[in-house]
Image (cartoon, rainbow over all chains, first blue to last red; front, side, top):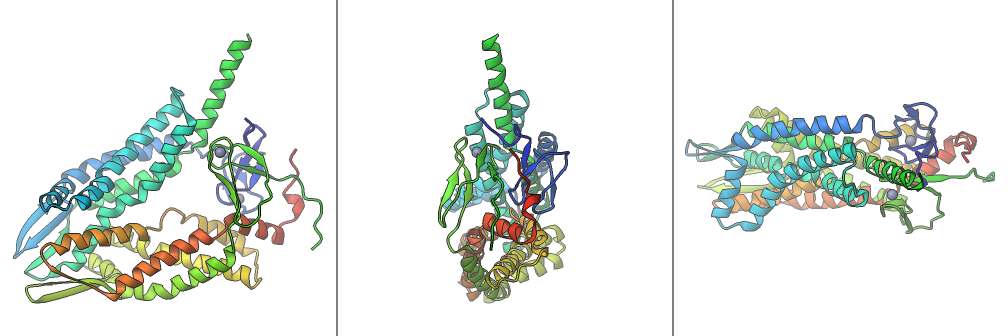
Length: 212
Length: 216
Ligand SMILES: [Zn+2]
Ligand SMILES: [Zn+2]
């Protein structure tokens, strides 16, 4: 396969112009931005952001995310207990949405990116086609995890009826936001072209073995 | 405009780096990568006109969407309603600085900047007021690609409505309608913007063709 890299060219990530590689970082001749042929230290950055996101995800689930005061009595709810409450009330679709946005998506994103980094690093059972699709789904789903944060923000603002009932945000909200933002950084630092590069090298090695 | 013989132009796939000769596309056509199937280049229909009108409508709707109350609750005779901007203010008041600033960024600032950016770009193209600074401007515009979260906030509104519906009397206000319209306008404005076209036009207008050097 003819790639930009094999021809000594590189694609500008901002304006999508194909530039000649003289020395890295390359300065784009069209938008004047500087960039690298592949995202700079992509695997290391992805791994680091991902690890940080995973660490922040633990307190995000242990601490309460929302405190509801009713007639002065506080009632704390974590992410999971909030979902349980929806189930108790029979609001299954909302329970599923919240569960997906605040538990499944962040976890899938963290695990998925770790797997992708591992696959690129070792080249084990690499299917670039399938894996780049997975990457796109992960990238697309990222912002939707902010759902719970926005819900809490809305509840804090709207349910403010003095002594009768009011809502406060718990410490988990900060950790959870950090998790979401860090997974977005992690996904942005990953370069799907590395998947294809690795595969190309592997198939070349195979052919070299066959011919000798 | 007398065009010299153009040097050979390449396009590379953003996802897998496969290299192709630049295809000639008509409006509404798109080219796909043969290696990974993602879209290589796309020529959108009426890009400038559409993004101009959508972003103009979006900017007009912006004020009611942010300032009018989204919804209100009534419980035990007390009524309280809040707008998107109130959300930010209340959160600051109650010392939740982090969510306040993120909410402000993702649901107010980034969408506004993106809309104004799209309006400025399409305005400059529509009325032929191209300036070299647009090159920098459009590059900066791309930095915000991932960070507009109006659609997520909309889902947040729906979820909190369900939450509130249970034990309070919920009322929906005009702000919600303008917010939904604002969301539609900003989505359409950024979807209509044809990035490849804009970059090519800017390049032709301000950069010497021989700086886009021939690579064989
Ligand atoms: Zn560029
Ligand atoms: Zn491709």
